[in-house]
Amino acid sequence: MKSGRRRREEIRLKRIERAKRLEARLSAPPYAVARPGDGVEDADRALLARHNNTCGTLPAFYIDKVFTCRDCGQEQVWTAKQQKWWYEERLGPIDSTAVRCLPCRRARRTQRAVPGANLLGERRDRLRALGARPPDADARAEVEAALADKWWGLRTTAIATLGAWGDAASVARLKTLLAEHAARDGWNSWNRQARAAAFKALGACLPDDETAWALERYLGESEAAALRDGLARRPPAFWEPVIDAEWRRGEPRRLQRLVSLLPMVTAEPARRQRWRERLEAHAEPGVRRWAAWAWPSR
Image (cartoon, rainbow, N blue to C red; front, side):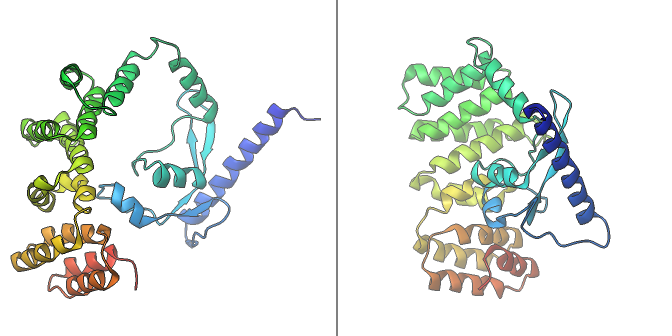
């Protein structure tokens, strides 16, 4: 009789073989059509678009992927079902991928659970806990200290804590951070990371009196895409004059960003249909394409 360990190893090898066959079948001519089933899951592109700011093409489906574990070096399979859960339920970044197998992830969690073994993680957890209660002078001082820390992860957590507080002082501090990190450095720079984190935090706590400022930043800057969720909470009547103003202004990029936001606004079907038909009739082809892409089919 085979041992449980031997059986698990056989299952792992079979999964790897099946995933490699599937990838080869879909990537080599004559190209096969991926259909939901064993090793394939449909992707919700509308959901992915709301939570990812990427220049790349969002996937139409997920397939089982083979990867090599960073810790143990064994080949493993990141299944299509696991990918769908990660990207659409946990809202993981679309450019992230699996790097460790399940046993190594468990071992890593056990190691980090030892008190003092992960001081950086403990500081981040404390900052997140501060965001769950009203701020006082000591909490603000701890956030400011984290913002000056050498670790980028700690700084971005501190920025998220300001967004979780969402009071006037925190919103003002987030806007100050945007000004402090306005330098146009490369993509992998702290200035870029700080602005992205600040926009994301502001999108989560956007107050009504900052709507005009946020709308101008969102329409004018691609980096401000994270403000979209906060702006989408504004009532439908707010958007009528905005659409009229941007239509008269006629700048395609601003109209495209507006088109990507409007489907997220909670509005009655007749109004949404009217917005879509108007934008699909725009003279600029790019705006028409964005309108057709952003709204689901009739």
